[in-house]
Length: 414
Image (cartoon, rainbow, N blue to C red):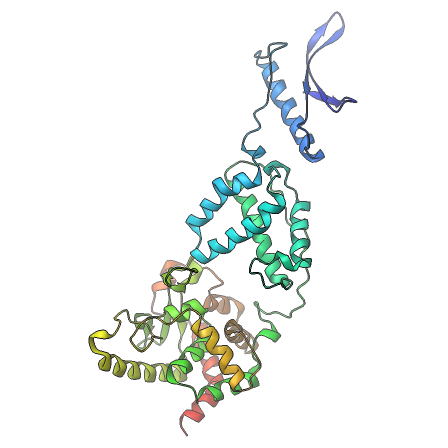
Protein backbone atom coordinates (compact mmCIF):
# COMPACT_ATOMS: atom_id res chain seq x y z
CA UNK A 1 0.00 0.00 0.00
CA UNK A 2 1.30 3.48 -0.85
CA UNK A 3 2.40 5.78 1.96
CA UNK A 4 3.09 9.50 2.00
CA UNK A 5 4.39 12.28 4.22
CA UNK A 6 4.47 16.05 3.95
CA UNK A 7 7.72 17.87 3.41
CA UNK A 8 8.58 21.24 4.94
CA UNK A 9 7.98 23.01 1.60
CA UNK A 10 4.34 21.81 1.55
CA UNK A 11 4.76 19.08 -1.07
CA UNK A 12 4.16 15.41 -0.34
CA UNK A 13 6.43 12.46 -0.93
CA UNK A 14 4.39 9.48 -2.07
CA UNK A 15 6.13 6.09 -1.85
CA UNK A 16 5.27 2.61 -3.05
CA UNK A 17 7.03 -0.52 -1.75
CA UNK A 18 8.09 -2.84 -4.62
CA UNK A 19 10.28 -5.47 -2.87
CA UNK A 20 13.60 -6.10 -1.09
CA UNK A 21 17.19 -6.04 -2.31
CA UNK A 22 20.28 -6.83 -0.21
CA UNK A 23 18.08 -6.70 2.90
CA UNK A 24 16.74 -3.24 2.11
CA UNK A 25 13.29 -2.09 1.03
CA UNK A 26 12.96 -0.91 -2.55
CA UNK A 27 10.69 2.15 -2.71
CA UNK A 28 9.49 4.07 -5.75
CA UNK A 29 8.57 7.65 -4.93
CA UNK A 30 6.84 10.56 -6.56
CA UNK A 31 6.16 14.12 -5.45
CA UNK A 32 2.65 15.46 -5.10
CA UNK A 33 2.28 19.27 -5.24
CA UNK A 34 -1.04 20.70 -3.99
CA UNK A 35 -2.63 23.40 -6.14
CA UNK A 36 -2.24 26.81 -4.44
CA UNK A 37 -5.34 27.86 -2.52
CA UNK A 38 -6.67 24.36 -1.93
CA UNK A 39 -8.34 23.74 1.41
CA UNK A 40 -6.73 21.33 3.88
CA UNK A 41 -9.56 18.81 3.48
CA UNK A 42 -9.24 18.97 -0.30
CA UNK A 43 -5.46 18.42 -0.09
CA UNK A 44 -5.97 15.32 2.06
CA UNK A 45 -8.42 13.82 -0.40
CA UNK A 46 -6.23 14.75 -3.35
CA UNK A 47 -3.01 13.28 -2.02
CA UNK A 48 -4.84 10.04 -1.19
CA UNK A 49 -6.20 9.90 -4.71
CA UNK A 50 -2.74 10.65 -6.12
CA UNK A 51 -1.15 7.91 -3.99
CA UNK A 52 -3.78 5.35 -5.02
CA UNK A 53 -3.35 6.12 -8.73
CA UNK A 54 0.45 6.13 -8.45
CA UNK A 55 0.50 2.75 -6.72
CA UNK A 56 -1.83 1.25 -9.35
CA UNK A 57 0.49 2.42 -12.13
CA UNK A 58 3.58 1.05 -10.36
CA UNK A 59 1.94 -2.35 -9.71
CA UNK A 60 0.88 -2.57 -13.36
CA UNK A 61 4.43 -1.87 -14.51
CA UNK A 62 3.34 1.21 -16.40
CA UNK A 63 5.28 3.76 -14.38
CA UNK A 64 8.50 5.01 -15.96
CA UNK A 65 10.84 6.78 -13.51
CA UNK A 66 11.32 10.41 -14.47
CA UNK A 67 8.25 10.46 -16.68
CA UNK A 68 5.53 13.01 -16.03
CA UNK A 69 2.77 11.60 -13.88
CA UNK A 70 -0.56 13.36 -13.25
CA UNK A 71 -3.86 12.28 -11.79
CA UNK A 72 -6.90 13.32 -13.77
CA UNK A 73 -8.80 15.69 -11.53
CA UNK A 74 -12.06 14.99 -13.33
CA UNK A 75 -15.16 17.16 -13.19
CA UNK A 76 -14.98 17.41 -9.42
CA UNK A 77 -12.40 20.16 -9.82
CA UNK A 78 -14.94 22.23 -11.75
CA UNK A 79 -15.95 25.54 -10.19
CA UNK A 80 -19.48 25.91 -8.87
CA UNK A 81 -20.13 28.81 -11.24
CA UNK A 82 -19.24 26.65 -14.25
CA UNK A 83 -21.22 23.67 -13.00
CA UNK A 84 -24.28 25.86 -12.43
CA UNK A 85 -24.16 27.32 -15.93
CA UNK A 86 -23.32 24.14 -17.86
CA UNK A 87 -25.15 21.44 -15.94
CA UNK A 88 -27.35 22.42 -13.01
CA UNK A 89 -29.50 25.24 -14.39
CA UNK A 90 -30.20 23.49 -17.73
CA UNK A 91 -31.14 20.36 -15.78
CA UNK A 92 -33.64 22.05 -13.43
CA UNK A 93 -35.14 23.95 -16.35
CA UNK A 94 -36.07 20.60 -17.89
CA UNK A 95 -37.59 19.02 -14.81
CA UNK A 96 -39.12 21.93 -12.86
CA UNK A 97 -42.15 24.12 -13.46
CA UNK A 98 -41.40 27.57 -14.92
CA UNK A 99 -41.94 29.37 -11.60
CA UNK A 100 -39.85 26.86 -9.64
CA UNK A 101 -37.07 27.20 -12.20
CA UNK A 102 -37.19 30.98 -11.93
CA UNK A 103 -36.88 30.78 -8.13
CA UNK A 104 -33.99 28.29 -8.23
CA UNK A 105 -32.22 30.30 -10.92
CA UNK A 106 -32.53 33.53 -8.91
CA UNK A 107 -31.02 31.88 -5.80
CA UNK A 108 -28.17 30.45 -7.90
CA UNK A 109 -27.43 33.70 -9.75
CA UNK A 110 -27.93 36.15 -6.89
CA UNK A 111 -26.51 34.26 -3.89
CA UNK A 112 -24.80 30.92 -4.54
CA UNK A 113 -22.59 31.91 -7.47
CA UNK A 114 -21.52 35.33 -6.05
CA UNK A 115 -20.70 33.71 -2.69
CA UNK A 116 -19.32 30.30 -3.68
CA UNK A 117 -18.79 30.49 -7.45
CA UNK A 118 -14.98 30.11 -7.30
CA UNK A 119 -15.20 27.10 -4.99
CA UNK A 120 -14.52 23.71 -6.61
CA UNK A 121 -17.21 21.03 -6.31
CA UNK A 122 -14.88 18.72 -4.38
CA UNK A 123 -14.07 21.51 -1.92
CA UNK A 124 -17.64 22.12 -0.80
CA UNK A 125 -18.32 21.09 2.80
CA UNK A 126 -21.17 21.42 5.29
CA UNK A 127 -19.50 24.55 6.69
CA UNK A 128 -20.21 26.26 3.35
CA UNK A 129 -23.89 25.37 3.63
CA UNK A 130 -23.92 26.61 7.24
CA UNK A 131 -22.38 29.91 6.12
CA UNK A 132 -25.09 30.11 3.45
CA UNK A 133 -27.85 29.48 6.02
CA UNK A 134 -26.41 32.04 8.45
CA UNK A 135 -26.23 34.65 5.70
CA UNK A 136 -29.85 34.00 4.73
CA UNK A 137 -30.97 34.23 8.35
CA UNK A 138 -29.11 37.41 9.28
CA UNK A 139 -28.90 39.58 6.14
CA UNK A 140 -31.93 41.32 4.55
CA UNK A 141 -30.01 41.51 1.28
CA UNK A 142 -30.28 37.72 1.06
CA UNK A 143 -33.80 38.15 -0.32
CA UNK A 144 -34.08 37.70 -4.07
CA UNK A 145 -37.29 39.76 -4.18
CA UNK A 146 -35.69 42.96 -2.87
CA UNK A 147 -38.14 43.49 0.01
CA UNK A 148 -35.39 44.35 2.48
CA UNK A 149 -36.62 42.22 5.41
CA UNK A 150 -35.18 39.10 6.99
CA UNK A 151 -36.27 35.78 5.55
CA UNK A 152 -38.55 33.60 7.67
CA UNK A 153 -37.13 30.33 8.98
CA UNK A 154 -39.09 28.11 6.54
CA UNK A 155 -37.98 30.32 3.64
CA UNK A 156 -34.34 30.03 4.70
CA UNK A 157 -34.70 26.27 4.50
CA UNK A 158 -36.26 26.60 1.05
CA UNK A 159 -33.31 28.67 -0.19
CA UNK A 160 -30.87 26.17 1.32
CA UNK A 161 -32.68 23.42 -0.58
CA UNK A 162 -31.35 24.95 -3.79
CA UNK A 163 -27.73 24.57 -2.62
CA UNK A 164 -28.47 21.00 -1.51
CA UNK A 165 -30.11 20.29 -4.85
CA UNK A 166 -27.06 21.55 -6.73
CA UNK A 167 -24.67 19.26 -4.87
CA UNK A 168 -27.08 16.33 -5.20
CA UNK A 169 -27.01 16.87 -8.96
CA UNK A 170 -23.19 16.88 -8.88
CA UNK A 171 -23.31 13.50 -7.13
CA UNK A 172 -25.89 12.17 -9.58
CA UNK A 173 -23.55 13.05 -12.44
CA UNK A 174 -20.66 11.43 -10.49
CA UNK A 175 -18.66 14.66 -10.37
CA UNK A 176 -18.27 14.07 -6.63
CA UNK A 177 -18.45 10.85 -4.65
CA UNK A 178 -19.67 11.85 -1.19
CA UNK A 179 -22.55 13.96 0.07
CA UNK A 180 -20.97 17.20 1.36
CA UNK A 181 -24.12 17.92 3.38
CA UNK A 182 -24.88 14.75 5.39
CA UNK A 183 -27.98 14.75 7.63
CA UNK A 184 -27.47 16.69 10.85
CA UNK A 185 -24.39 18.54 9.59
CA UNK A 186 -26.00 22.01 9.68
CA UNK A 187 -28.38 23.94 11.92
CA UNK A 188 -31.33 25.86 10.57
CA UNK A 189 -32.89 28.87 12.32
CA UNK A 190 -35.58 27.87 14.77
CA UNK A 191 -39.12 28.04 13.51
CA UNK A 192 -41.11 29.02 16.58
CA UNK A 193 -44.47 28.50 14.94
CA UNK A 194 -46.81 25.82 16.23
CA UNK A 195 -47.54 23.40 13.45
CA UNK A 196 -49.72 20.40 12.67
CA UNK A 197 -49.06 19.18 9.14
CA UNK A 198 -47.76 22.63 8.38
CA UNK A 199 -50.52 24.29 10.44
CA UNK A 200 -49.57 27.57 12.05
CA UNK A 201 -52.06 29.06 14.50
CA UNK A 202 -51.03 32.53 13.34
CA UNK A 203 -51.61 31.64 9.69
CA UNK A 204 -54.96 29.83 9.83
CA UNK A 205 -58.42 30.61 11.13
CA UNK A 206 -59.91 28.89 14.14
CA UNK A 207 -63.55 27.80 14.13
CA UNK A 208 -64.97 31.11 15.37
CA UNK A 209 -62.92 33.10 12.86
CA UNK A 210 -63.94 30.76 10.08
CA UNK A 211 -67.61 31.23 10.94
CA UNK A 212 -67.17 35.01 10.81
CA UNK A 213 -65.39 34.60 7.46
CA UNK A 214 -68.22 32.45 6.04
CA UNK A 215 -70.95 34.78 7.28
CA UNK A 216 -69.21 37.74 5.66
CA UNK A 217 -69.02 35.85 2.38
CA UNK A 218 -72.80 35.93 2.01
CA UNK A 219 -72.71 39.58 0.97
CA UNK A 220 -70.09 39.07 -1.72
CA UNK A 221 -70.59 38.90 -5.46
CA UNK A 222 -71.15 35.30 -6.65
CA UNK A 223 -67.74 34.88 -8.34
CA UNK A 224 -65.81 36.23 -5.38
CA UNK A 225 -67.87 34.20 -2.92
CA UNK A 226 -67.32 30.88 -4.70
CA UNK A 227 -63.56 31.48 -5.20
CA UNK A 228 -62.95 32.10 -1.49
CA UNK A 229 -65.32 29.32 -0.47
CA UNK A 230 -63.48 26.86 -2.72
CA UNK A 231 -60.12 27.87 -1.25
CA UNK A 232 -61.16 27.12 2.31
CA UNK A 233 -63.57 24.19 1.77
CA UNK A 234 -61.39 22.18 -0.62
CA UNK A 235 -57.97 23.34 0.61
CA UNK A 236 -56.67 24.02 -2.89
CA UNK A 237 -53.59 26.02 -3.81
CA UNK A 238 -54.13 29.31 -5.62
CA UNK A 239 -53.02 27.97 -9.00
CA UNK A 240 -55.26 24.92 -8.59
CA UNK A 241 -58.30 27.11 -7.88
CA UNK A 242 -57.69 29.30 -10.93
CA UNK A 243 -57.14 26.32 -13.26
CA UNK A 244 -60.27 24.37 -12.31
CA UNK A 245 -62.60 23.51 -15.19
CA UNK A 246 -66.11 22.08 -15.09
CA UNK A 247 -64.71 18.79 -16.40
CA UNK A 248 -62.97 18.48 -13.03
CA UNK A 249 -66.25 18.71 -11.12
CA UNK A 250 -68.17 15.46 -10.68
CA UNK A 251 -71.62 16.31 -9.30
CA UNK A 252 -72.77 12.69 -9.61
CA UNK A 253 -70.09 11.26 -7.31
CA UNK A 254 -69.60 14.51 -5.35
CA UNK A 255 -65.91 15.22 -5.79
CA UNK A 256 -63.54 17.65 -7.49
CA UNK A 257 -60.53 16.30 -9.39
CA UNK A 258 -57.29 18.26 -9.01
CA UNK A 259 -55.04 17.64 -12.02
CA UNK A 260 -53.54 20.97 -13.15
CA UNK A 261 -52.45 24.39 -11.96
CA UNK A 262 -52.19 27.91 -13.37
CA UNK A 263 -48.81 29.65 -13.44
CA UNK A 264 -47.51 33.05 -14.50
CA UNK A 265 -43.99 34.13 -15.43
CA UNK A 266 -43.28 37.84 -15.60
CA UNK A 267 -43.50 39.04 -19.19
CA UNK A 268 -45.31 35.91 -20.41
CA UNK A 269 -48.97 35.02 -20.69
CA UNK A 270 -50.58 33.01 -17.92
CA UNK A 271 -50.55 29.29 -18.60
CA UNK A 272 -51.62 25.87 -17.32
CA UNK A 273 -49.27 23.12 -16.19
CA UNK A 274 -49.64 19.59 -14.90
CA UNK A 275 -48.75 18.81 -11.27
CA UNK A 276 -45.00 18.41 -10.90
CA UNK A 277 -45.42 15.02 -9.20
CA UNK A 278 -48.00 12.28 -8.75
CA UNK A 279 -48.89 13.61 -5.31
CA UNK A 280 -50.43 16.69 -6.95
CA UNK A 281 -53.15 14.58 -8.57
CA UNK A 282 -55.99 13.97 -6.11
CA UNK A 283 -59.74 13.94 -5.59
CA UNK A 284 -61.42 16.16 -2.99
CA UNK A 285 -64.92 15.23 -1.78
CA UNK A 286 -67.45 18.08 -1.93
CA UNK A 287 -69.40 18.90 1.24
CA UNK A 288 -73.13 19.00 0.55
CA UNK A 289 -73.51 22.70 1.34
CA UNK A 290 -70.55 23.65 -0.83
CA UNK A 291 -71.87 21.54 -3.72
CA UNK A 292 -75.15 23.42 -3.52
CA UNK A 293 -73.28 26.75 -3.81
CA UNK A 294 -71.21 25.46 -6.72
CA UNK A 295 -74.33 24.31 -8.60
CA UNK A 296 -75.86 27.74 -8.05
CA UNK A 297 -72.74 29.37 -9.49
CA UNK A 298 -72.80 27.04 -12.50
CA UNK A 299 -76.41 27.98 -13.24
CA UNK A 300 -75.51 31.66 -13.09
CA UNK A 301 -72.49 31.13 -15.35
CA UNK A 302 -74.64 29.22 -17.84
CA UNK A 303 -76.89 32.26 -18.11
CA UNK A 304 -73.86 34.51 -18.58
CA UNK A 305 -72.63 32.15 -21.32
CA UNK A 306 -75.98 32.32 -23.06
CA UNK A 307 -75.93 36.12 -23.04
CA UNK A 308 -72.35 36.26 -24.35
CA UNK A 309 -73.10 33.86 -27.19
CA UNK A 310 -70.16 33.20 -29.54
CA UNK A 311 -67.98 35.68 -27.61
CA UNK A 312 -67.79 33.30 -24.62
CA UNK A 313 -64.47 31.51 -24.08
CA UNK A 314 -65.18 27.78 -24.41
CA UNK A 315 -62.35 26.37 -22.27
CA UNK A 316 -64.73 25.68 -19.42
CA UNK A 317 -63.07 27.49 -16.50
CA UNK A 318 -65.09 27.31 -13.29
CA UNK A 319 -63.99 30.74 -12.09
CA UNK A 320 -64.14 32.75 -15.29
CA UNK A 321 -64.20 36.41 -16.26
CA UNK A 322 -67.41 37.84 -17.78
CA UNK A 323 -66.40 36.49 -21.20
CA UNK A 324 -65.31 33.07 -19.90
CA UNK A 325 -61.55 33.61 -19.78
CA UNK A 326 -59.45 32.27 -16.92
CA UNK A 327 -59.10 34.79 -14.08
CA UNK A 328 -55.66 36.17 -13.22
CA UNK A 329 -53.52 34.07 -10.91
CA UNK A 330 -53.22 37.12 -8.66
CA UNK A 331 -56.95 37.81 -8.51
CA UNK A 332 -57.77 35.41 -5.60
CA UNK A 333 -54.86 36.81 -3.55
CA UNK A 334 -55.98 40.43 -3.93
CA UNK A 335 -59.60 39.41 -3.44
CA UNK A 336 -58.85 37.70 -0.12
CA UNK A 337 -56.91 40.67 1.30
CA UNK A 338 -59.56 43.23 0.30
CA UNK A 339 -62.37 41.02 1.60
CA UNK A 340 -60.74 40.61 5.02
CA UNK A 341 -60.03 44.32 5.33
CA UNK A 342 -63.58 45.26 4.31
CA UNK A 343 -65.11 42.99 6.96
CA UNK A 344 -62.54 43.68 9.72
CA UNK A 345 -61.34 40.08 9.69
CA UNK A 346 -57.86 39.11 10.84
CA UNK A 347 -55.54 39.41 7.86
CA UNK A 348 -54.75 35.98 6.51
CA UNK A 349 -53.05 35.30 3.20
CA UNK A 350 -55.01 33.26 0.69
CA UNK A 351 -52.75 30.28 1.38
CA UNK A 352 -53.90 30.53 5.00
CA UNK A 353 -57.33 29.32 3.88
CA UNK A 354 -55.63 26.11 2.73
CA UNK A 355 -53.99 25.80 6.16
CA UNK A 356 -57.39 26.41 7.75
CA UNK A 357 -58.73 23.42 5.80
CA UNK A 358 -56.05 21.00 7.02
CA UNK A 359 -55.97 22.29 10.60
CA UNK A 360 -59.75 21.96 11.05
CA UNK A 361 -59.67 18.42 9.69
CA UNK A 362 -56.85 17.60 12.08
CA UNK A 363 -58.61 19.22 15.04
CA UNK A 364 -61.73 17.17 14.29
CA UNK A 365 -59.89 13.87 14.43
CA UNK A 366 -59.23 13.03 10.78
CA UNK A 367 -56.16 10.82 10.41
CA UNK A 368 -52.95 12.40 9.15
CA UNK A 369 -52.58 10.08 6.17
CA UNK A 370 -55.94 11.12 4.74
CA UNK A 371 -55.23 14.81 5.33
CA UNK A 372 -51.93 14.54 3.50
CA UNK A 373 -53.66 12.77 0.66
CA UNK A 374 -56.28 15.51 0.37
CA UNK A 375 -53.65 18.24 0.60
CA UNK A 376 -51.46 16.66 -2.07
CA UNK A 377 -48.63 15.98 0.37
CA UNK A 378 -48.72 12.19 0.03
CA UNK A 379 -48.02 10.17 -3.13
CA UNK A 380 -50.95 8.26 -4.56
CA UNK A 381 -50.98 5.71 -7.37
CA UNK A 382 -52.40 6.24 -10.85
CA UNK A 383 -55.24 3.84 -9.99
CA UNK A 384 -56.26 5.98 -7.01
CA UNK A 385 -56.14 9.11 -9.15
CA UNK A 386 -58.73 7.97 -11.64
CA UNK A 387 -61.03 5.78 -9.53
CA UNK A 388 -64.49 7.17 -8.78
CA UNK A 389 -64.72 5.57 -5.35
CA UNK A 390 -63.81 7.79 -2.41
CA UNK A 391 -62.84 5.94 0.75
CA UNK A 392 -64.72 6.40 4.00
CA UNK A 393 -62.05 8.64 5.55
CA UNK A 394 -62.31 11.11 2.67
CA UNK A 395 -66.08 11.13 3.06
CA UNK A 396 -65.54 11.90 6.73
CA UNK A 397 -63.49 14.94 5.66
CA UNK A 398 -66.45 16.19 3.62
CA UNK A 399 -68.74 15.76 6.63
CA UNK A 400 -66.36 17.72 8.87
CA UNK A 401 -66.24 20.61 6.42
CA UNK A 402 -70.00 20.42 5.93
CA UNK A 403 -70.48 20.88 9.68
CA UNK A 404 -68.18 23.91 9.51
CA UNK A 405 -70.41 25.34 6.76
CA UNK A 406 -73.66 25.06 8.70
CA UNK A 407 -73.62 28.70 9.74
CA UNK A 408 -73.11 29.62 6.08
CA UNK A 409 -76.08 27.46 5.07
CA UNK A 410 -78.37 28.93 7.76
CA UNK A 411 -77.79 32.42 6.39
CA UNK A 412 -78.38 31.14 2.84
CA UNK A 413 -81.85 29.90 3.80
CA UNK A 414 -82.99 33.12 5.53
